[in-house]
Length: 176
Image (cartoon, rainbow, N blue to C red; front, side, top):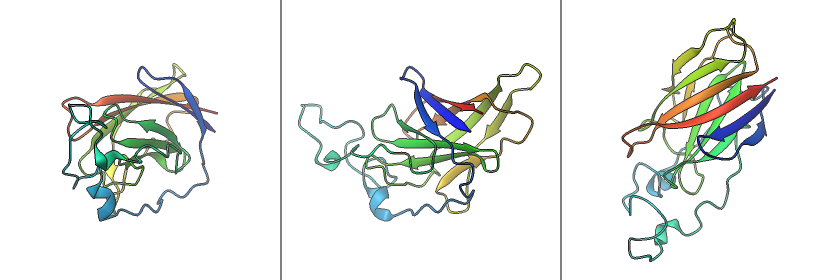
């Protein structure tokens, strides 16, 4: 099963799903990651790689060096240029969302709010809306999709970042 991903107004990207991956993916959260840009404990400049006068932000040196998916899903750079996210789907595990700081280190998901809309290609299948909930460790947002839709279908992810007023839209295309 393949996953195609696009962020609204961004180029289309294709990545492969890993249906055999375990649903309880081990994600290690660290205080170090939470203290870096994008983490809950970061206290530096709110946005960007430069101060308002054009000087580089030292805390961002080396950020964004790794944009590889870690869980077989679709990897995105967030519009705030600080966070990264990975959207993963498998029939067994449903939809899972992993969040990362500017250095692509996992961060706790409790500050983020999200829901998905599953849009089937088949007219005889209904759309599904699911709110994502944190897993037991607070490292993953997840929701079951169920078996009432069959691939191919599109998943629209609406993700509200802690500093944002409105959610951002990300689209993931699930194919056979």
